[in-house]
Image 1 (cartoon, rainbow, N blue to C red):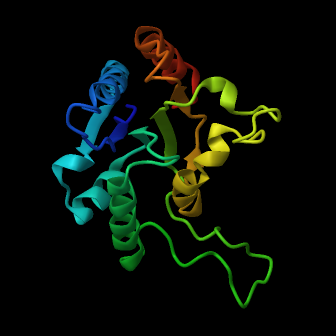
Image 2 (cartoon, rainbow, N blue to C red):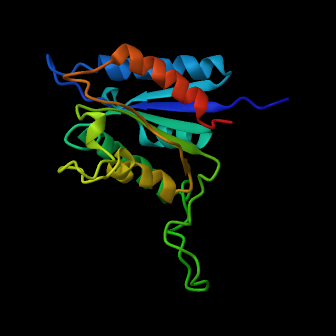
Length: 201
């Protein structure tokens, strides 16, 4: 009999009253929750803004087969509460050698690369992000600000933590231009299709 799999959904939204209440990110989180429940997964959730215990977050990560970060992009990164969360999470996972065993390098084997000491080899990680920026700002050399860089390039500071610990990074999902020209209904449908298309098996 196939063992039940587990999805961990992390919501990094930070509320700014009367300006950013988090409804869109909550809607994407709901889509993911419903999708994985329909697939027979156990679903664990963390809303960082509501508080968390680092040891419990480590346990959730160890239990999860797939981890999805749902986040707005504030000033070209996740809200500051997510940085605090990851510092505390990965430090707790490192201290007990549950996430990784050093940085991978070895004085006895000089061929071993930095970033090859991770223990989360069976895990998959994905970012689902909401942006004020339009899609045209990315992957286009004619754009002055990003100069051809992609959203994946910009979010390396997030995905690298998981890659460093051995996880596979899945293609992310992006909802663009949410302030001025957003298409939330269409994007929520596209997110369902994205989850179906990525390799979650």
